[in-house]
Length: 110
Length: 122
Image (cartoon, rainbow over all chains, first blue to last red; front, side, top):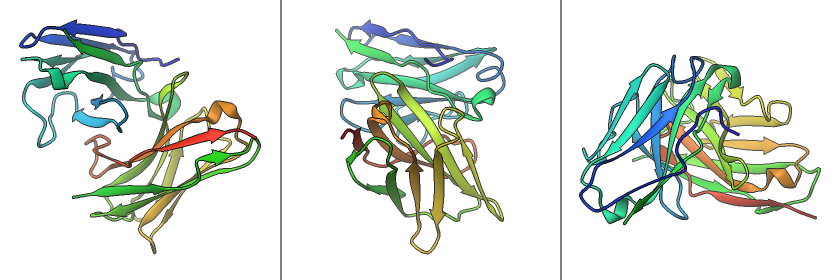
């Protein structure tokens, strides 16, 4: 299993703000950038956040990332039905010499 | 706009070699700022980064420890594509395989192929 852990699921009502945590260690989050990906059912992952808190062009500012020590978070404000998806954090991991994906979090909009 | 198009078989027999190709449009496999990766996804293993190749005056590759003894990722500059070879596959290698690109340093895997479902079965 992954060395980077996320809660299996979070849920919220439309318009709410939800946060997804990503917990790692000094060999991954603690010393490298964190990236966040959104995966809609049946599609490839899509980059949401890079370098901890930067949004690629086209990603709504409802999505924001942060990092502190060996943990990171993704916040979704103004939750919308189209935000229902799986979300993954992915820092570089020194011991694996590569990216490590978190365990993933399913966001449900109630 | 960078796009990646994957090709390759969806069924591989146990002990054989899995081979997939990813054709790049809108960027170059030989770009001095990009890196080109393979990622797979299965219910049992989740998302797993397998390795990447990149050009910085010469070619480099680095691979995930979990597959390092069995994997090769090769660039093909003449066709502007890169490939994945995974040897000695077992049913545990059954997964959806994606190619993905990071077009400048530390910008994340911002472009993805469409995914190829590969089943390892006799």
